[in-house]
Length: 219
Length: 53
Image (cartoon, rainbow over all chains, first blue to last red; front, side, top):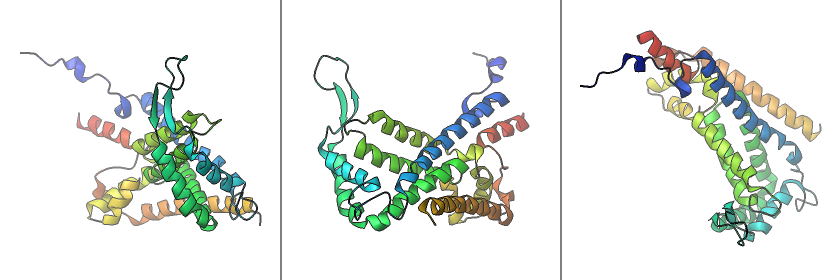
């Protein structure tokens, strides 16, 4: 019969359960840097589309946010491929790619029929969402909800702009991937306000509060 | 007021609101039923394991 080796039991555990203080500190630090970095990315994008004009000119027909909305519609029929890999450089076009034509068309239809006609208030939704992502990611405040908003915003940008000429598709894809990682990790649990809030929300949830359960989901 | 100042004030108000909300929850809700302590969630499980052994 195989015996359990007692030495194996004392092996230091890894990942988020690392027993070393240095290891744990490193994990918290890297998650905080990634989260604050993502928040700062959205912070930098707030200033060229400030309300109430959102950077648009000539009665919301060009410039600023209006330019990028137009650009997404105009380029809906462009290459329409993502995750391109040109394995054999001599052959024309990438050998590997993911077709996203249906998504770009759907995105263009949404922008044309919903966003553009209502840009006077929809601009506030866009700006407010990006401001929320900045606050959530930098303060670790309802960070899972913030990361979910970041996924939505990054996905929209990726579908609308990543395939267009003169854009490096991976800048958008990496934004999506970082947002997905933040969603899974819920960074506020490591360094932010969520760290203080979660024990209280857990208590509320255990007392049967639906609001507590919902708030717990968002942190 | 310029749009930049308004935007900065909105962001500042957001920070203040988040901190105030957290303080209100900390004061108003008793965490004793949670069965957990405040702190890093990843570290917490480690601490609980150490206490058991």
